[in-house]
Image (tube, rainbow, N blue to C red; front, side, top):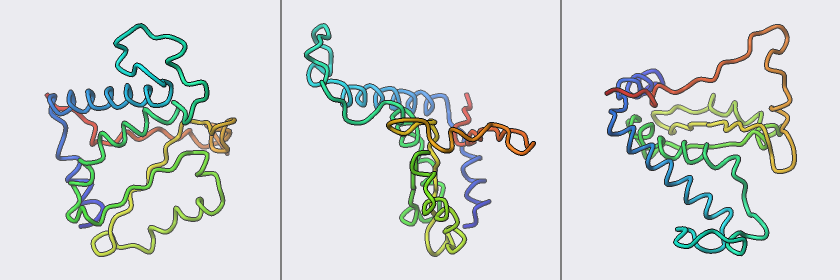
Length: 164
């Protein structure tokens, strides 16, 4: 199935209001669990008032990337099901800190060697939040308007469109 046919199938399957509510509930629950995993040592269900001893003294992970990743996971199954051969679909999520490296920049061109119908589809997702652990990323430092060109507009996938 060609890319335009997959895109057509995705676009023609808008979210119903019930599906949108389910996805939103999933996303909010995943974010709640993520906050508990990142910040709390104890009392994740907050059955008692939150105390300082419930909070981890050293955090592992960071909140900046979590809502975006949970958003991707919530919507990914719809995208995968739109492909004729879902066993040949791979998703690669790359943060903007990693995307600034030379080898990865060149790797974005590897899709030119693949035929999605026989080799599988690679869905690259560039997750931009502007920061890596210590400071802004290279991509976050690039001006919004460069060389007189208008700033790129974010592309909201039509997968997220809601119908009542």
